[in-house]
Image (cartoon, rainbow, N blue to C red; front, side, top):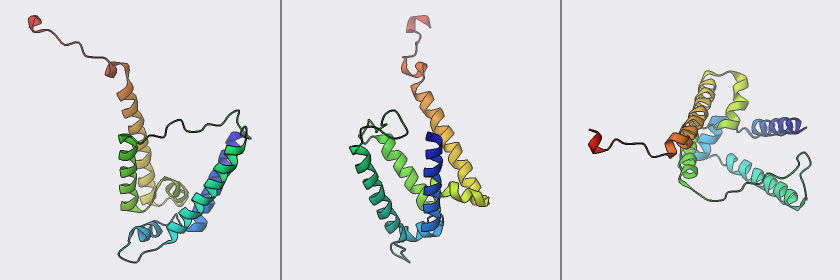
Length: 154
């Protein structure tokens, strides 16, 4: 049942992106162009999303258990660290350069536009690279001190 709920949520999210026009990179770039032909549409979409999300979290926090799961899976971290800031900066730079982020890119993938396909392929490669980097950084050999030959060994 959880997979059905996830599918329905994804479809609602995608429909919201389409209805609001947020699948159009020019809308996002228009919002970022504060000294030119500024388009405030994104601000209204975000305000609506924050309001709906805040109401949903308020309702969920009052419940003793979720409907489709054995327990709530609330985040267990609230610190701001270098990987979070670095990731946010990279996301913002990419978003500002092309005017699209992962959600709208997946919705736009249905059109098979070459720039969107390239974006999604690059996004997937970035996720694979991040997973590889994470495994490499936490691999057992990375945590041990290397055995260096002593000077007497020559």
